[in-house]
Image 1 (cartoon, one colour):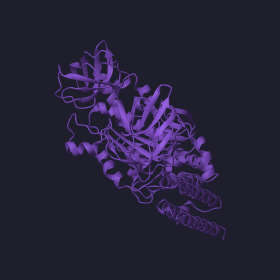
Image 2: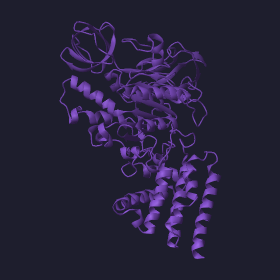
Image 3: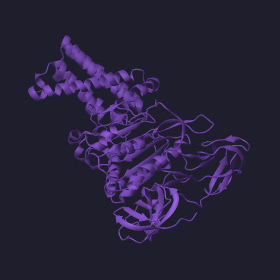
Image 4: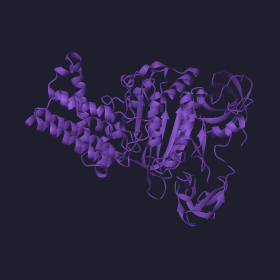
Length: 591
């Protein structure tokens, strides 16, 4: 359909105002100026439209044309998404590099997925069957790890009157026809979906299974459930991005969507160069075979940053609808909020706290609430999830600023990064006294059934010991550690072992980078047993000086680096030697 062209009357950074736009709709995509820069209508008054342009607007002036499309900002969905690197509005960066070189010129575009590539389609639905939105009609092997399930688009239901035979087809080819009361609908492997609207599900379910990340402080102390939401706030250099990278590499998810939203170019470059080289620990295949990357660095147009998180969550929903568990990393939502603040200022809206728009909280909530464990659409009862982990970069590490506080009202897991821990070279620098997880009661049943029944009790004991250490440290700062009674000094020794040898983890060590759940449990059990044994020994007269010289402490400190296929036997030996060594000290005292 042809629409009448509008005319630009004002340009203010990424915000353009155009007249002669009667009939346009909010969030409609338009092409601005001679170069056809992509933009989105974000305000309407009479026949005037306010447009957010997703590219650099320098050189555009009043009098140039604005062309309407009649459609909102939408993603192209189909086979070929996995392994791609997109910008904030789903332009494939490798394909654009082939066209424009290392520096992307304005107005350049490329198809988000290869429209001419033929995929081997295998039908699974039979002619005459009753279908509804979300039903799988066929499969395509997208990568070695991911089977792409071709679905009936949401909102379509009826009788399958035609489906192609097994064979090779492009994403644009008609592969099926569905007949309903309204008529016949052709279905291709290609779908379009507006980014600002969540894809429908039957119902949301309570999350109960943990998202295993292989990071000890996260899995054991502050777990996130599959379908859960988490925030990682912290000041500069505290390790937000490294933590996000670790989650993207090792999280127990079928699909990973990583959104680099306004991050520094060197950090995003590290992701783009490192991920293609990484091997998936569960399958032995390249990790990119189940990963989608969205790169919108801090020097890219600010308006596209605002769209990038919606692009990420829409891609996540698409694969969730196929029945996969998806993990989405957003790094960082603060940069997204800053983009909203800049555009809000250009629009001359009334500012809220610290200049952020008054709708900051509702925008954050709308994003995080698209996560969840759900019974997905379709006639079959299938359950899948989207877990969202958002990094927050508060200026100066001030966790009382608006983005952090509004995020904490929404998410259920808070991993508080601490500058003091970073300065002590304690990584991940997550403060165990300020962090929390509201999923503990939900996931403890899984740990009890799959790892050990006493997991929750051990975790509770360890947290109590760490809290006791914090209380004792206040006394130590006043009178020194030697003034404490021997049993209190034993508590400091026990908590130090947990703090240094369990909570610390080396993301760059070939073994310690990932710690399986059972290994985490055994490590914590042995460390708490060490505390029980030295407490008992001190009660029987063993001096704290001798406790500090135990060889077992060195063995316990090395547990994290024991290879993940050898740890059970090694840990049994460490436990046995620890008991013998402490037992011999007790025996000496008795003699």
